[in-house]
Length: 444
Image 1: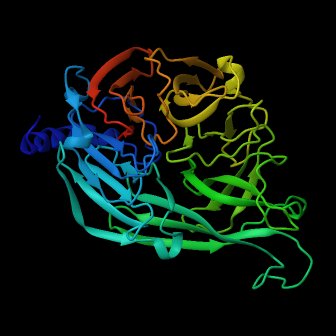
Image 2: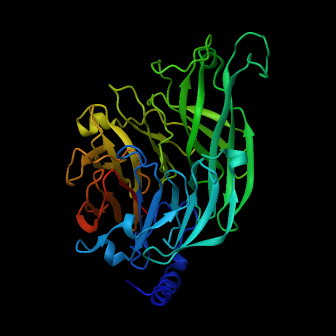
Image 3: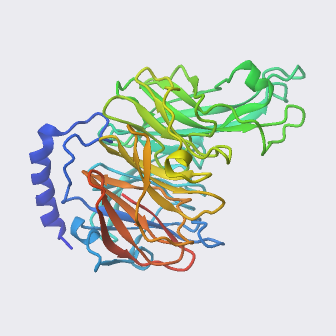
């Protein structure tokens, strides 16, 4: 393991060499595809609370060098040797572009909604900086959030609360005719460098009158992404339908086209809804990024909860912030299987992405290489196990041409796997030591 002093010198040198080429806008794409061999690589694991794989018992992290992450003879035991990140349940983690800072918003509990920042020093040495801010009063104790690819400047937290009918008590039209169910949406910008709330907006976001009359509403917002122009945020939605007569949520209903909310940036004002006629599922993801801005200015997003005969799609939003309904990329069709469900995915550059998915009636996880331009998908050759489940996976690391994924079945040992996004070559990296009921949930 490197000493902190030597790492600091090496990092400083690397920063000086790359400063001129550094693109501070949309850093999800590394224009030079240079691998940073000086960065810390943080591994995260979630502890079981009551049932194997539930991940609700807290989150542990452990940082290793680039060399150790790639070494199959090096063992990482995040549960015995790691650092407990502040969170009552599974922490919502993000990392800085250089890997030296870990960002966290605690999820539920007494400190739910508290944003904190940790200096990564290797091993279990994560030092919480003497700055924090709690966003719970604006976005609840369980906010969804994502770091924008804007040079580690901004995080966006989102929430929907208090979904009621317009004719419910205290509604907009007490005792009147039912028109809609709506919640109050919050979109909040966090200044990641100064650790403060830079702005927030709250509003109701209407659907069409016809959709709302049937009881459709936006249940959750998640996975915000900044467009290439830097003037709009596109926010994923999880849709819900309630019975207009009873107010009860319906589990089986005719789904609408996939919807995203577009707001002005940085003002966070003027929310509008755009609808895909290609997708019928949600585009909120779960605990990770779900939309990515690519080099050509298009945004690609995955869908979840599609009707079972359709499976997840990759949708395209063009530079005009509208869905391109001529772009059809069905993962069922591309992979030749049924009921594909994308748990987590990540854009790696040059039109290539990697998706963690299940298919059929099983939760068993697989990895696929996606070519967004050719609209093709190929299963990656990694060890298969019935207990490999990516349902709570949060972090796929892209470091230049290299893509890092933690492959560990629930309660079983596994490894870091590194895939070259240009060539498809696979490298088996460090061993990940597991414990019964626990799961590794990401590389940062």
